[in-house]
Length: 282
Image 1 (cartoon, rainbow, N blue to C red):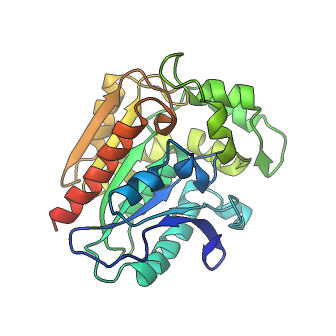
Image 2: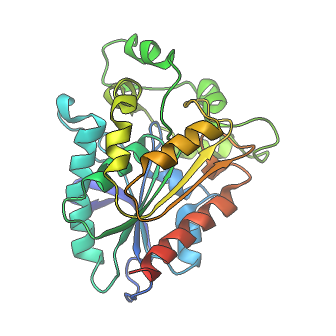
């Protein structure tokens, strides 16, 4: 459904009475998934937030759900961050009254965009950001792979290829996965896929260094979309040099989409607990 003008998404608990101890949470999905990424039955961040009395909204980024695409030159990470910043101002105006602030949860490309929003919040009442599925550098072979695609606006990953990329080794996810995740799958703008592999590594230090709010960071050990090891996670944490507090960890035995792995419940509860802690620190 369209939540704010032309921006679509999902929500839970937004009508509940405001509390000084309960922040408004906004979730921003990654590439090739809609906002339904956060609402897959049995793996739903929205359900877990609702069960814990937390108001949460999952937005569809430009070109996802029924949110329209931006002009081609604006379909970059930065362009989407600027668009979503304005949307978040609308979100806060409608649902923020009486709450201590907003916490953003971002995954993958959505995490990179969330970091950009947090680095330049433009007056948003942001009190924390939780990032996952993003690191310092992508494998070098990814850039020519995405750049070699035909000149088309949207890219569709075949399910067998996507499942191999998004999930960790056998045993790290339950039998119903990856199939259960397919209800959230969709096409992705080629522009954002090229941008994440061609510009993020050049900008990541400046982006992370400009974030001042607390940061919760989790990265899967078997994430095939990023170069990942303890050193890379430590480098990400070190780059957050101006954040008031950083909680960064490498999560063993899981792949890119930690939300869909056996660690899902523990992962989500750690993010929600982080959001509550941010509110308590105001």
